[in-house]
Length: 361
Ligand SMILES: NC(=O)c1ccc[n+]([C@@H]2O[C@H](COP(=O)([O-])OP(=O)(O)OC[C@H]3O[C@@H](n4cnc5c(N)ncnc54)[C@H](O)[C@@H]3O)[C@@H](O)[C@H]2O)c1
Image (cartoon, rainbow, N blue to C red; front, top):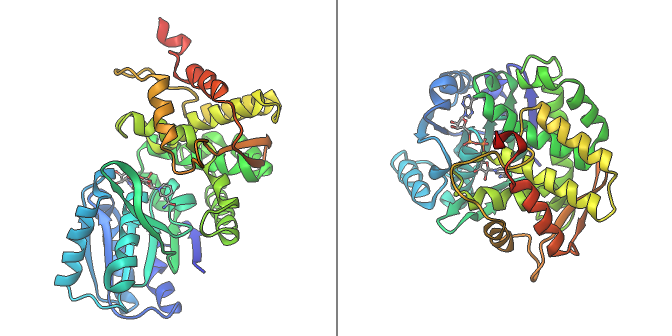
């Protein structure tokens, strides 16, 4: 069971929290070239004050670092550092750093204690929680990995202030997803506080991050290996993943792709008679108020419905020939459906990919 610490200014508590959990030995901080210069010093000071010797490695930023070849570089570093099994691996960064550092922690010396210090909204409410760690294969994202939960997840909402605006919006997409599938009251809060959450001035910032994180903890506790309930966390992801992949991960951030995917999944929910149209419209308005797309923005490369469908057919959640769809029957309640007619999916995709009316001018 992971210990979750969330709040403004928690970074300085890292070392003492690790001690409280009985961690000893040295600390190996894995970060990236943007995050480490911003927060590395504070992290290492906190470790030092708690009596931990530490060393740090900075990866190049971005998804390209989430590869087996980078894993090898990190193994080399740990070997050179003479890391031992009782030492701790600390991930300081967004989901990319968390996923690869966790995979290294899971596999080096058959497993070392692992701590997550997530620094993006997406990582604080989603990727750092639940123990999925791994790297990409050249032919597909997240194909190599393990379930290896961190013993401590320490989120400081202060660090979000240095995130680029686009990353902030993309992170909120996962919070809106969480509200749509699990928590209607959370959706009210997101709707009423959109501006303050987008510019990170809302006094509810930590409360909302914590509420989303706790939902993820609850769902994962009920279905650690994603055989049932955990799949609802993939709301918006069937189309979202396919869009990201079809555009070679170059055009859309994950949260932006999920936002378009949620618009698609809500439209499907309405079309099969599960969801009131007004609920889908409300979702889309909230996504837009966070600066998120609900259809593909105009891009300088062609993307056909057939290409997206082909990517969807490779989706991990495909059972037999069919995609598993996470649909809504009301705001705050999701269900898993596999009988969605392909013609309907095609129709919805066509509308998501059609040039927006504004782009015609
Ligand atoms: N393990 C899971 O359950 C899970 C769930 C969802 C997504 N993911 C993975 O997460 C990854 C995406 O994570 P992400 O969206 O956090 O992206 P990311 O880790 O690439 O971070 C985005 C960018 O923001 C920078 N950054 C991070 N924190 C910052 C800060 N506080 N200030 C300034 N810049 C900062 C990073 O250097 C990077 O350039 C993907 O690889 C995805 O597959 C994993």
